[in-house]
Amino acid sequence: EINRTIFRAYGWGQIVLGAILLLLLYPQAPRDTFSLVVVGCMLAIVLILAVVVTPLIISLGRSIDFLPRNPPPPGMQRFWMLHGAFTGLDGIKLLAGLVVLGRWIFKS
Image (tube, rainbow, N blue to C red; front, side, top):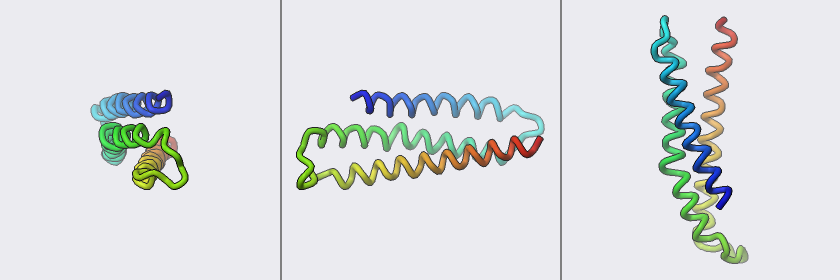
């Protein structure tokens, strides 16, 4: 349950940070449209992960928690598929953030 709580807090914390960053970028003059779009996409990914993927992982994880692993319980394959989707989308979000950060560093 601790891991599940951390997953939820991680998602909601990122939503808050992403919204703050978007609100800070929007009134800039001149507006950096590229960064605004990338940060908006990052926030969309976070919303998908926090509202859709994480609850599915948590629910499925609870249902297979104490089942024997040999043979793999039904749902295990779906659990790892969702886990892989979470990791992949989180990695894409990280790369997008690094692109924006690099743009800001090398722009000045």
